[in-house]
Length: 321
Image 1 (cartoon, rainbow, N blue to C red):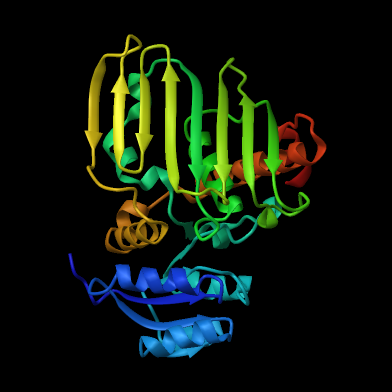
Image 2 (cartoon, rainbow, N blue to C red):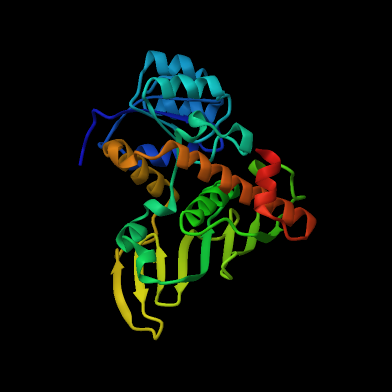
């Protein structure tokens, strides 16, 4: 469906300029880009000039002069909370490829108004799974792989999206153990983590969650396996399989396509959000609660990786709220 009446602004930095180019090309003919903003660097200003679009490094000025229906932040350089508040008050749909804050006390209606893209729970495979938990009985284990190269999602974005999705299916884990293999010292800030992250989380009901995340993988892959006492499910971006415990396939779907690129996932998710705004309606209080819980789990993983010991997400959440 083509709807050039959808008018958008893209905000980026020099590092993400190639991604911005890919997204513009992915959405060509489907939307209209009004302007490009971001840091005043040749990679960004050249991008705007090559597409005959105005450029500015002042986001509020850009939104006033070129009021869009949607804003996508590929970077949060030079973007302040006042900018986000102005955009939210104008009923603009804002999306970002990483949470705008890792601080639990700073999670607010304004910060969660910035929808995170691309979400695993919005991929084609998960949509085909419909109501996956209804076929599994007691959920015993969840295994989730979310990996990509450095040009794709940051490890911070992967971690928060993964935890938000998992917490929609299970309670907060009682404790987590995490190991981060990184070419640099493990930082204190979630936004700066990079490398290969392995997580094991224990659930109060005896179940467990295992995750493998990486922003330095040689390939892109997102896959979730759910093991219950009555069934098992495997979901990827392009497929879905439901099994009985004896291995009999109950239901399956195969999109028959290659693994979509990061730019394609962002573009399709963004376009779907813009063209189906009512489908994006959410309980704001629930979203804030889940984001805080996800950040509590993420911080617990970082602490565990730094100390080499188990950490309790609930304790982290209590200390930071």
